[in-house]
Length: 492
Image (cartoon, rainbow, N blue to C red; front, side, top):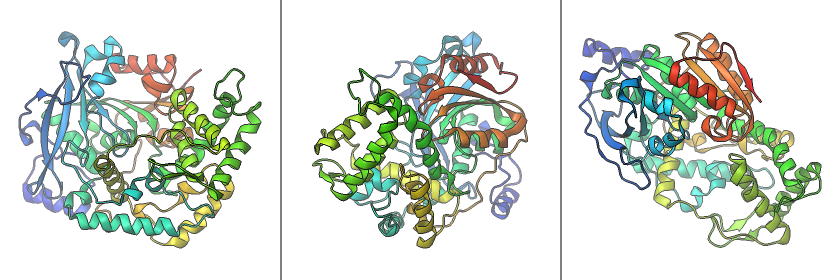
């Protein structure tokens, strides 16, 4: 994030000494004027415009190499009611919100669209901002490799080999930017965005990983925030503490599976899997185990077979959005029972996946160091497989970070209860990726600075997505008027 103008040499020395723990604040004078032009893409609001902002690649060397951050803006629909700018902080890592002002913006109530210019952006490393990429093998771009599923017997040897292979591919890329993609630098970039927009304070709506970025921004620049909504909340320390970013899937799947089982056993459901909800879990586990032993060829997919881990990954992906995801999981289970496969899913082009995978790796690995010993992962995976058989040890396994070629340049953000009370958390009870248990940890860390609204709802994405009308109303009211619930609130 940004920097307060002082003696330049003192700033540089302090940044190096203290790892930029005390951020420096950007002013409009630090940025060039934004030139807004028509955005690329289809289906956008014709009023949406895009611009490119230049920021330091390395905030410890602000006079060094610059990188581009691409922004989008949809202006307030009622200038007389305009309060400021609302930045949409995307999830991921690896996501962007460039289309958000048009696509998500159309679902916002008029009171919010009147109050703000809606701002989207592609975070550092994400195309079309200055991109990073590693020349990963195509096989390593499979979903079951990007999330580290162990072998059917629980071995992590292949995962450790993949971590070394992928880390070597990033090292060979020779792009120094890979070392500077991190949550703290994302937060610093946001403050550059604020300054370039000419805003004294910035409101933000962060989703999923964007809640950690939003919390980081709020921690690093407390006097630069206005109204902050954190939606589908990450554990406040997602890469330390049992590697909680990945470990969240264990609890998230367990929170969600009973809802899937009720849906999949409902009479009249064309995708019905069993007569009772109690039968669905053992059916899934039997199918996964059978596919571990005898995969079904699946031409055109990556990998080109339906194995147990592909079924498990499909379940995990499907639980993000029950409306579309539950039928997809059930269809795959029904096909597997018959020994067949549906049409191969269409994956994004390999260059897009390489960009995405490089951003994920750089962010997670640069935020904090992971264990390097295979023995740590063997032990943790064995424990996870016994305690959480649905996820088969994956959430405790070795990602690329187990062999990442660089050490973190600064400590991760520590979320605290210091600063103004201007945060509203919105959370679904049953969220596969950011479970309620992790959200409660963030709520605890923020203390008096926050109020939390909890939806009796299933799926990832709470506001204007898989939440409740009650939760949507409370968030919209906060954004439009600043009025928050007096205390933590359940929406049922």
